[in-house]
Length: 210
Image (cartoon, rainbow, N blue to C red; front, side, top):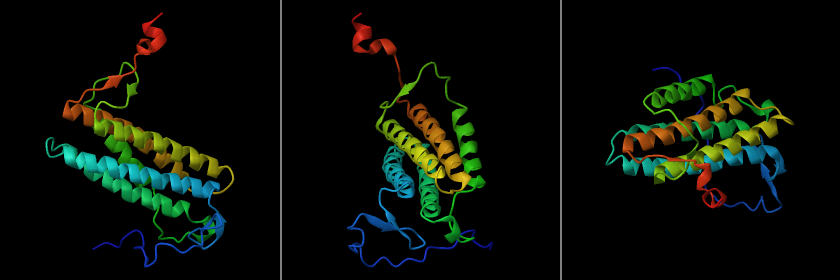
């Protein structure tokens, strides 16, 4: 068997609270104490938020898969992405000088995998003639929430990169993931026959009542 690319976690979580964060500081992976509202914490905190929303979407996909088995594939993909986001959070929580060669991270392989899935799952979809509004189905809406949180995580990483060093793959991965989430929302609507809600500018109050 081949060697695993990353070290397995070495954790022993016995106490949930430590009281060490009561003064508005937290620890990075290397032990450095930093403000909880710093740009690095904002970046990996938003990635963590995205991971939680993906868990909601994965649970919905798994439930809907009972009626539409093709969604089981999406649930599997979302679980993989959750692991990848935790890897991304690991590297963002670590200063460059403390990064271990075998520490979990996202790489070009993860980005290429997303690109392949985008192309494959976008292929059967009809061309868009307008922007899509979230809400065609519960899963569609949840994936759009994931997409917008992913965009915020990407912006947070760009902000962090202006003052501190982060791997370039971090921004690239989140950029591709937001595109993938858009395609996955459309693909899920397509395979379930839920339909899509398209933006119609004249459906506004002023548009309906000129």
